[in-house]
Length: 254
Ligand SMILES: Nc1nc2c(ncn2[C@@H]2O[C@H](COP(=O)(O)OP(=O)(O)OP(=O)(O)O)[C@@H](O)[C@H]2O)c(=O)[nH]1
Ligand SMILES: [Mg+2]
Image 1: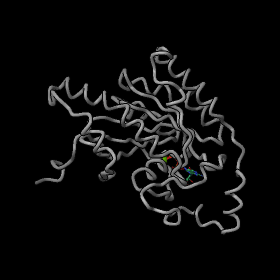
Image 2: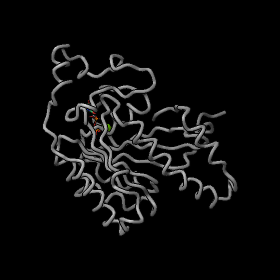
Image 3: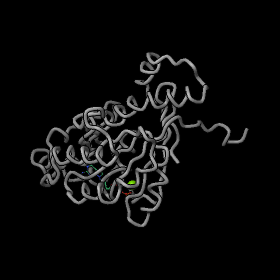
Image 4: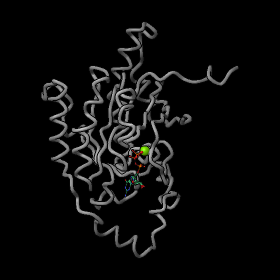
């Protein structure tokens, strides 16, 4: 049987967008491999197929570098959820979301869900400096150079934030409000900013599962509607789907 015939068809698409260096690839690594690894700046884009209950979700990692900007709207085409990522220590990375990336989402589904995500929270928030990985992979199994810091330097960085926080949670929530307005959506009939603005750390795992799994649950109605439209699955057991979601299923990355 040829390899291509075994490939699962994604039911829905989730896209990571944001400036270079904010940590999009690291977030995807953390979620899918439970590791914080060395990265190289992404070229073009790559996707990971995640099995979520009975569904297949493709998570697209895109390049933040300006030279790949033109590809962004292509990656967003038909997206059910878009993760607009910034770096909490870099105000410009939040501004870029509005100036450069928001217009790329015009090709997403009309009912696309938006999350505004401030990554690198470990640099500013002592709570985020604690490892939150729940799969039993300890932080000393991570592979990033930053983790090879001398022990005394590391313990100092655990007690005092290394960089000042440039972007507050309120700034991110205000951006979320402007995104809704850009999309012509009413705030009161949309998902609230408190639920859709996250601060994460790909380095420690802080909030990373919560981010992805909140979005997966929120895109389920979109999957069900698409399936019903295609009349492939007239009845779907939501309970079964939620029950199966806690089981992590991995697929290959390309
Ligand atoms: N302290 C800290 N560093 C991080 C975190 N996430 C990523 N980094 C570092 O930030 C740098 C950029 O991370 P990437 O994941 O490659 O960033 P990206 O957004 O994918 O960048 P492009 O592919 O160029 O768009 C790397 O040096 C990472 O090790 C984090 O949560 N905390
Ligand atoms: Mg990348």
